[in-house]
Length: 324
Image (cartoon, rainbow, N blue to C red; front, side, top):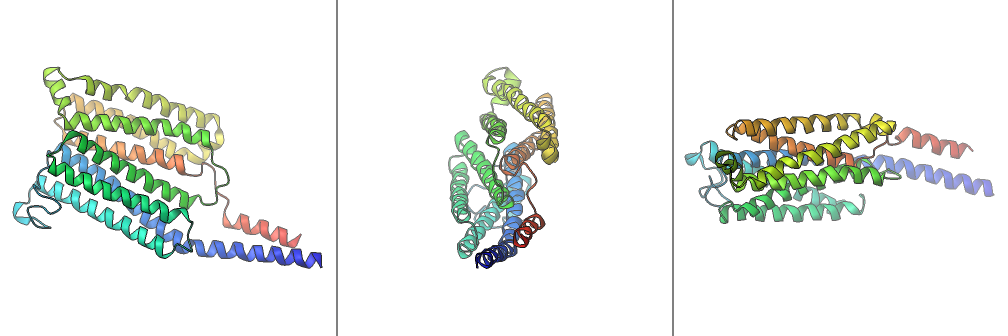
């Protein structure tokens, strides 16, 4: 009798495992795909925002949320108007996409992890704050602190979205490496601070004043100095991964991308200064690189650093238990 009871319990557990593995793709696939689109849209949004700032197109549309009183200002369209209009359009599409994910999470709340609707509600709140900052940048005529806050909220949206994606990927992770995450968090925090300084640098014209008149160079020098601790922290991460072979084996693609982005970011920064900030392509590339750098760091922080056990392994272990 005891044997039959144990066998029934194991069979029930096996069936439960099968059901879990079968229903998860129903929502995981949708949320993962939507999450990937959100990440790409946010990186594009940040890059286009950087291009808008560099091309001095932040006030190309004098009103908000429309542009010259219409959704598509064809009669006023030029490069600057297009940049500002497209930046707003991308922001609107990102907001709609996140709202859609939030609605789906409410509809499927009984079939998905409890944390997902709560996190999407946070994401939706950040979108509302981001839209408010976008309106204030026009109302306050590109106030430096408003522009800076606008960018930092965009980075928070990117970080939160990537963290959701990675948590969906690693829903079976047993134990997170806290020390590894803390090690990765250091360059992420430093990069956010450096981005804050960088926006202040461009929005207050401090870089141009420093390069042209050798005045107000404190912000520019601080921005350049921050490259040293960021570089050191990334090299420490690489050295740690090499020492812990398993970390290098499972994360080498992300770590390689991190090194490439770090040194290309330094090169783009040098080229921007060498050309006296007169080549928009270098500055826009610098902004895009920073977004990708933050995205890679966030991915490394929240992903499972080791290979996740697959379905076959789980099923096989259950079969062994049933057989025993």
